[in-house]
Structures are given as C-alpha cells and as structure tokens.
Length: 258
Image 1 (cartoon, one colour):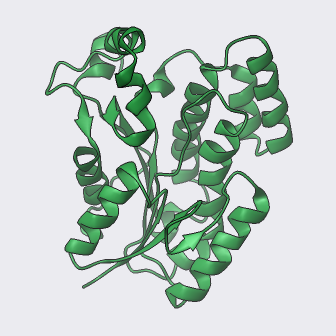
Image 2 (cartoon, rainbow, N blue to C red):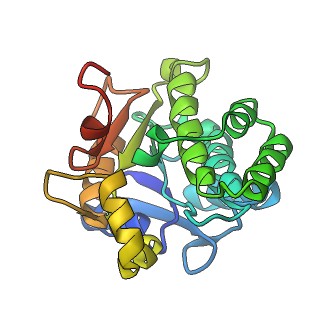
C-alpha cells in the first residue's frame, strides 16, 4: 500500500534521489526545501519550521508514514547548526502527531561520518538542551576561533545523540515510531562538488574519510539504505546510526569500538 513520506532537502542531492526512488516505488512524497519543492520553507528559523509543519499537516490529510531529513549545509556558515540540527528536530517533533496516526511510522535522519570527528562540546550540549540561542552563540565563538569546520561535525554528532535518546523517549517507540540515522561517508552531490574540484581539499578528504569499499558514494546509494529504514516492513530497528561509508568508520575507529 502506498505510503506518504515527508522529505526535507528534497530538491537536490540525497533528498532528490530518495524522492525519485520512493515515487517510482509508488509512494507519495511531500518534499520540503528552501525552494523548488512541494513546500518551500526556511528551516534555519523556527517560523520556517512551523510553517513547513503546518503545510504538511494541510496537504497530507492528517497523517504521514515517514519523515526523512535530508536538508543540510556543510560550509562554515552560522546557519549550519540551525539548519542541520534544529531544522531536523523541529520538523520531526512537529510532525510527531501525524506519525502517530500511521500504522508503521518511520523517521530517518541524515547524519554523517563527520559526527565521529572532532566537534565542539558547547554546541552539542546546547543542541541537546534544545537551546537554539545558546547553540548559535557557541557556533559564533567557534567561527571566531577559526574552527568553522567543526560546525558541521558538531551538528551531526548532536543529531546522532538526539536520535538515540529520542528513539526510546515517551511518545516515540511505544507509539511505534522508529527513529534511525543514516550516516554517509563522502557522497558526490552538489553540496560536495567544491571539495572534488579542489585538489588540496580532495587529498585531505581522502585521508580524513577513507572508503575502501567502492570509494565515493552516489546519492542513490545512500537513498536506497534510507528507503529500507523508512519502509513499513522494517521493524525492530530504532536508535541506530547506520554508516553508509565504504568502511570509513571502521577504518578510523578502533576495531573493538562498537
């Protein structure tokens, strides 16, 4: 039976690939993006997230079967944390009442292998405290210190922790709502195009994220794993971070870490 899946960041990259795959499988996708999707919304602001939730509520008919959060930024911008973390949790929490009305509700968050790399403790703590103002202030301090690259890893580390904590919190597992994270390695998308064009950055990337199995991923590779986790037939999997990284996480962390 066709399912209704909400996809943020649906206009490009992994979100576009997932939208195509789900649509071809017969599901209905309600896309959210800054522009060029079913619902245009600025997820960097609370008002934009609320507007997106209201729009989904209106067009969905009052129930959704899945939410996948692909929207995100990777540059050293003050918007990285608001979009990547609060743009994710705000939409998921706002749509929780609609998920509860599904027979098999699923949530998949797009994390990153970067979540295992150095991050800023203050940003992560503020995110998990749901204190967006404090998170923005901490992000500004990180940028002022010349560590803007840690904004992305901080946001993705916070997403992984939030998912594991929320998956078993009241209102989620007992309501049948599974929450999982798909954490890609290096994916060839418009967001990463600049890295591949810069030989110096590409060399750094190859060392920081070694991918011995098949090398760099394509958006479709990540979307297929998301599709498995968002399917109603996938049960008993929740609170997990699934690395789709060609072996990068295994290469970078001790063999006895699990």
